[in-house]
Length: 93
Image 1: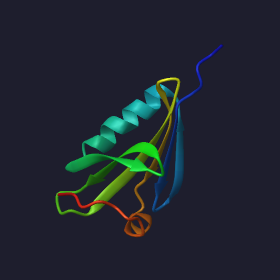
Image 2: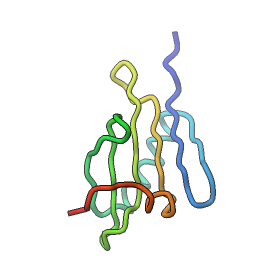
Image 3: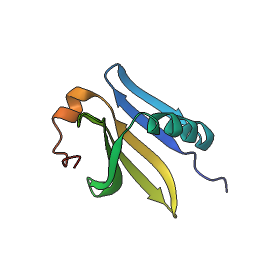
């Protein structure tokens, strides 16, 4: 049986972007990580997640990870500032 494909869904100000495949998802994650200055692990609707902020304290992204059989199967990311402003996020401190 083939492993399920990793899926990344990013909610941006321009719309939703979906990336499929572990290699493509990992490449995108490395690029995004270079932008964040601070971050911390959190629970997002009961899922393991991560919040990142710019140096100014402005939220950059919220990520939630779905894990199946010990592997990340899905990553949902919100980078839309309007949506981030509506979320109850911890302080970057």
